[in-house]
Image (cartoon, rainbow, N blue to C red; front, top):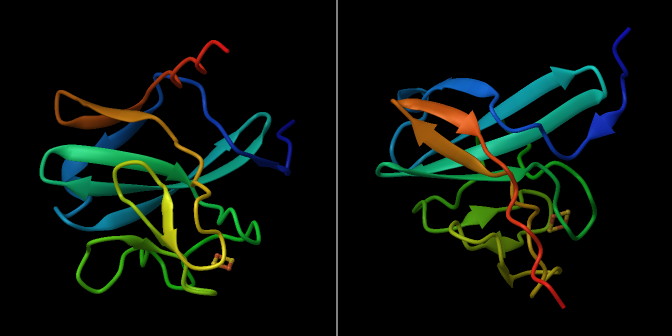
Length: 128
Ligand code: FES
């Protein structure tokens, strides 16, 4: 039986398909149904680099895009929350404008392996 709740992380090693499914400079939504619940994330592609995030604005906890795959500003320079306009750096998810200034999107670690996007192990938290 599969849980219907929301989860905010995935195991490492899940193959998500070809990196070419995301046009350079664009983003794409991914939904993974797992036994523990459903994960919603998105990935931004910049050249050969990919940046993944959990699809949840730190301000109000809602998914960022109101239109499928529409996660970026028109110029493609930032991730944008479509509800109240928060702007986030693509490389590290830091909010640089809007109601959650200084907060971050939750990273969803992904890498490209042989032309395919694969989920990765989250980095260890720094030792205090
Ligand atoms: S819900 Fe994202 S900026 Fe308000």
